[in-house]
Length: 126
Ligand code: HEC
Ligand code: HEC
Ligand code: HEC
Ligand code: HEC
Image 1 (cartoon, rainbow, N blue to C red):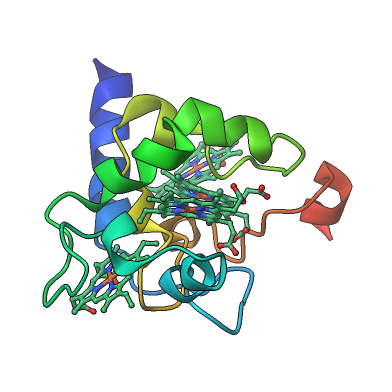
Image 2: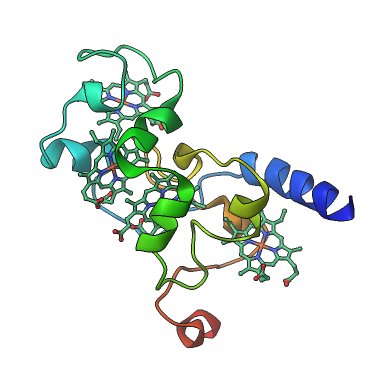
């Protein structure tokens, strides 16, 4: 029960987080998909969208699979952004971190100040 309460309050803090920038990239998620040859309709309901996708996470899952699948791709990162106490205890939408047309965010930093996702635990503690 206590664990559940902790995970719920963690999710609340997670969802209220501001835009803490992660590993900075020059383009946003949607631009990078466009560069890979994917149209607007790969994430949106239609080819000329005027609004955000109703359920963005569903679109991601169609190509990337569930969180557990993506977690394998980032298995060398510490901590693993896709496999941690937040993603294990809650349904977290991909777009909480990978914004479509804005800089990525990691709400983890709301509680873990300065948290980075790096290749080894040694680098993390630097
Ligand atoms: C990789 C997935 C993805 C692709 C590809 C994509 N979008 Fe989006 N789009 C999103 C997400 C997620 C949102 C929700 C807001 C956000 O995270 O930026 C969004 C929001 C929007 C919005 C609502 C306004 C806003 O910024 O919130 C518009 C308009 C939009 N997209 C247009 C487009 C157009 C036009 C294209 C094609 C050139 C496109 N999108 C391609 C994921 C995508
Ligand atoms: C039509 C299929 C498709 C959809 C829908 C899709 N992706 Fe992708 N995505 C790809 C492919 C293909 C790649 C390149 C190979 C890889 O890294 O898996 C990629 C790469 C990525 C990458 C790493 C590369 C980068 O520079 O960003 C992220 C992060 C990502 N996608 C997130 C998302 C998110 C979040 C959504 C939903 C809003 C989404 N994708 C929707 C197919 C898709
Ligand atoms: C807690 C924040 C967070 C959430 C939630 C999240 N990601 Fe990520 N994701 C990251 C970070 C951080 C990286 C590593 C740095 C980067 O590439 O931006 C990453 C990397 C990726 C990559 C590149 C992996 C590679 O090949 O190196 C893909 C693809 C991806 N995420 C897709 C997704 C999808 C799909 C979802 C939803 C099922 C998702 N992510 C949810 C933070 C997150
Ligand atoms: C609401 C605050 C909160 C948020 C948001 C949060 N954490 Fe935590 N996290 C904690 C607390 C509390 C602990 C336990 C005390 C400690 O070990 O520092 C913890 C412990 C951890 C640990 C070490 C213990 C373990 O589970 O292995 C890791 C790694 C971790 N968090 C990663 C993350 C990542 C990655 C995110 C973002 C996806 C995140 N946390 C988001 C509060 C938070």
